[in-house]
Amino acid sequence: MDCIQITGGVPLDGEVWISGAKNAVLPIMVASLLCDGPSYISNVPHLQDVTTTMELLGRMGASLAMDDGMRIEIDPRGMHQFEAPYDLVKTMRASILVLGPLVARYGRAVVSLPGGCAIGSRPVDLHLRGLQALGAEVSVVNGNIEASAKQLKGANIIFDTVTVTGTENIMMAAVLAQGTSVIENAAQEPEVVDLAKFLNAMGAKISGAGSNTLTIEGVENLHGTEYSVLPDRIETGTYLVAGAITRGHVRVTRTRPRDLDSVIEKLRETGAVIEVGEDWIDLDMKGRRPLAVDITTAPYPGFATDMQAQFTALNTVAEGTAIITETVFENRFMHVQELQRLGANIRVKGNTAIIRGVDELNGAPIMATDLRASAGLVLAGLVANGTTTVDRVYHIDRGYEIIEEKLGQLGARIRRVASPRKTR
Image (tube, rainbow, N blue to C red; front, side, top):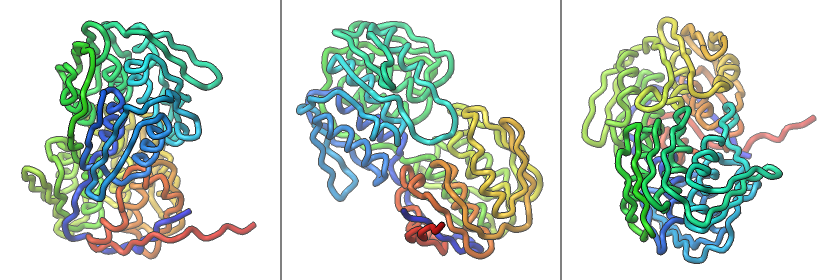
């Protein structure tokens, strides 16, 4: 098992490119099961979750090939297995996304209840009720979701709460349903829009993507296509915060600034000077200590919960006091205890963290608890005195491509090493 070692205190300076979006590429890969020929997906990031998804689709009989240019071919014509087993699903919640395509295209699915990051309960009941509304028979047996349908029928579906994966799952199922489906209180995230664009490129008829109401006219079949995944807005935000927390100057390229309005606004509140181009964002702290900023997470277009840990880290060394309110997941402050090991002054009460900025953090061994928390811990290590060792970095490998190399090219003193063996 690897860990990341960081010697902090270096203001970052330079340019870094942004990979394809993890939260878009995974549902797009799964959606390729819906068509009757191969699809070619480009701008695919080299991530553990992508590898896991490839293994899952391969076990089902899909043919996959990946070249050196971040392009993957997925051909579902060999599909013969319609089960997502626990050994894969337990590591990645996005595995639940195979449920809708399998039922819609092949009439049956057995999917183990999903795992992923331990950031709170993320029930799948909205997925199941959506499929039942489309006419599927659904049950949970021995930890597995079992679903079947001869032909899904269009339906009106209203989600009780906004759910990204629920919206994606039901949208994928509805594209092959008979008749018209309407999804109300749908997720509006850019990754949901990207999935809708991919489905439409395969011949689906989806309108309203990016709003809270989706209308899907079912079609008889879909064809393969070529598609490039959008840039990762969370990776973009993470590197911008890296520049801010170290009082540095960072330019991110190959990104999409319009997806980061709320993040850019908050970074400007810290005192950062930010310039924006068509596919780049430039952040310059001009050597100044950032100012504390309050954050309240919310579904898109609100402030992304996936950026909360990074701004929590930023506020630990900011001037003033910040209040972070987490409204999306109820257990997403597990990084706080690790930040306190570095000297952060944070008090958590319910879904709120009160952070009083300190003059400096000091390096220590810390442990990643989930994907985005691990990014926040790395950011704290960049500004801490001495050496910070972040263990369990397999979490970060799920969602960040070669993070130590990208930070290294910005001047960070960071390296990946084997974790020391623990002795009794």
